[in-house]
Length: 326
Image 1 (spheres, helix red, strand yellow):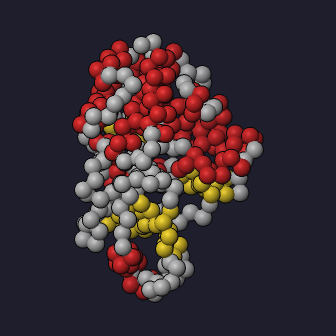
Image 2 (cartoon, rainbow, N blue to C red):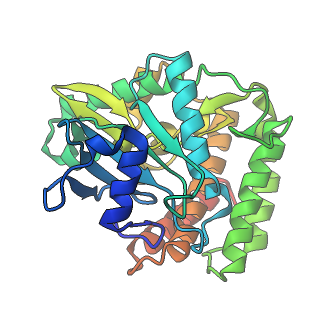
Image 3 (cartoon, rainbow, N blue to C red):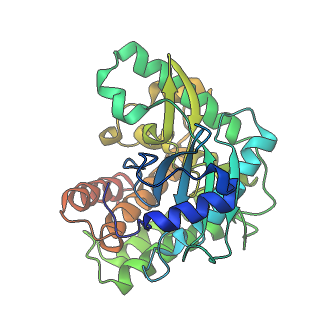
């Protein structure tokens, strides 16, 4: 996926980063085919790199400092590093091992880190080649993995690194307001007015008060961030959007209130969640509204060349506002 947030670096800079992380003896000779860009990501640039020893690793680089990102994306690499630490320390969910992280900006104009390379297929890429039984099995596995991630407790609602809020209502309302602020600064046109969105969210905000315990929410755990091999999930990647909040906000629950996202049945079965209550369904609709806002507004920040995502996400926003009875 092409995006102006991808901070591609010249070969010599990459060689310097490798030397800093693994030592100069691991830098391959010039002319060798030792680096290739991984194109599946939507935000950060990532390179697959072969060290001189033959070990393959991944280098991930944050967006350039002169490219404006959305408010919730600021400091995303710091969030990902913290998320990876929490997951490895508190769960058995498979994630890459961080080999080296550099936030000094001495070699590169942005944060970067190296991690282990996962030799596996991207579930989103191979999904169309799978049988319905295989797809359901993977969705069930994602449900179980998501539930395990949600066992990680937080001390406040909001970003992993803070600042946090004492209530989920306050945290979620801030998340929505930040999105609307981003869209307003860029004059992004929504299918409903900005004040209408605020009124819809405020009218249903009482449903958020049911959430009293901050829990780790991966949020971006969709098939595109799931690596599979031989019928198993071998790694979950891209954790830069994690936060402490309501587990029901996880991506796997999205389709429970919108068939446009597929079928959530297998995911929910794997998660072990009972049928959603009316209050939970209202919250999930609010979360679908939040997701639609992101998908609309980010098309401007990332300078998408076409309107396909914008048009699709506008449809989801209209759908969700209607489901909320507005």
